[in-house]
Amino acid sequence: MLPWESEAYWLVRFLFHRGLAVIYLLAFLVAATQFRPLAGEDGLLPIQQYVERHEFRDRPSLFYFYPDDRAIGITAWAGVGLSVLAFVGLPSWFPRPYAVPLSILLWLTLWALYLSFVNAGQTFYGYGWESMLLETGFLATFLGAGSTGPPIVVIWLLKWLLFRNMFGAGLIKLRGDDCWRDLTALDYHYETQPIPNPVSWYVHHLPDRFHRLEVLGNHVVEVAVPFLYFAPQPWASVAGAATIGFQGWLMLTGNFSWLNALTIVQAIATFSDGVLTSVFPVTAPSVSASAPPLYLQAISVVLAAVVLWRSVDPVRNILSERQVMNTAFDPLRLVNTYGAFGSITRNRYEIVVQRTTDEVITADTDWQTYEFKGKPTDPAQRPRQVAPYHYRLDWQLWFAAMAPSPRRSPWFLVLLDRLLAGDETTEKLLESVPFAETTPTHVRAVRYRYRFTTPEERRETGRWWERERVGTYVSPVSEGDLQLARV
Image: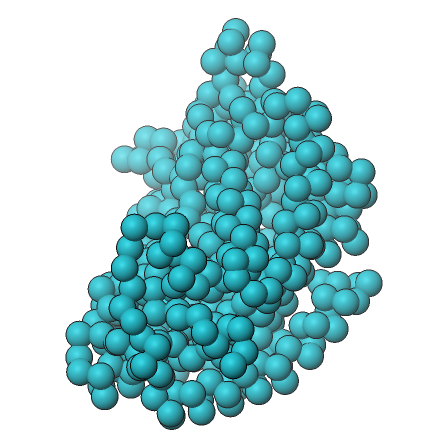
């Protein structure tokens, strides 16, 4: 008997499935509330663009055949409902012969529905954690349910996924920006990350020596620790605990959607029931005499063969000197490559969107500012904690602000057009609209460089940010100007 065959994983599967169900629930809630104004029929990137520019076999989605807001809404809320059923473990309520097939059907449906959003979401769904959720969700389909234990093979496939997630992130940092190698990356990161949270300001001002130790610890956890995922217990659990602690720190100091929470869920696979019950006062049922059904074991072997076959390109990418981050190699996103922040921005730029009701623009025009739900705008506004929820427009504005004009972000002009029209669906993506009872005559976008205030500055002014104007992103425009610009 191999060492890992003596371990039980019923409790591991229980925790893994519940954690993943919560993340699916958040993902579908985001889709239900944001997908239509971003990528629906009249979205900033209309879904018809996806239909016209892609073949179904290249980016399969239900919305290829039903590209309308009603189908989007039904699919999103169906995903919310199914996520709740997955969280309460509905398949396990049924007798053993039915529990596993129902579990497979439930988790496979969640995966297929979310795949539809990711493949049709265009720029607004171009983040690494989308493919990661799909890959994790597909593997979760074959963990079984009820009183039987999960196939050990699938547990190991989850470890392989976690390894690629962490190790890929570690290597892309070591190969990328010099600041990761000279241990200065975190001198900038907390201030320039996409959406800082309230703790980010405080951590940014910790001593340089602490930041050097942080970066060194990052390299250890992402490059060395992942190899222990495949070690016997308790070493695999020690590696999993280190990963969970590391991801918890990232959650405490930033807003990275559900990336960190999903990685924590993946890390559950590094534990065993024996380790969990020895540390926590919980009891797992004895499943040593209740092996997974033979058909599920056979499926898991076929699944392992497919994953190994599809892992060739991700492994080549990880080992390549030209490693790219967050890339899918097949339309179903079954086996992907991961890694983020290979380069660190030294300066933080923000786009401030403003409106006026003046008919003629002069030097004395009074401009009022739109506030967003997550990204910094008002220097006096405390950074917000929004993750693991994901405000997609705010994230995309962070990328857009890196360039001095919206040439690479054509959706931005559409956003201005919607704001000029007073479109309520688009305005719901924002935190507040100044003088919402009136329709603006002009809007503009100004580009600023932001930095955290020093402790002394904050004591004097109460502000979290200082900013200076560095340019005009979009000059004042009216609705007619934007219509001519799109002709």
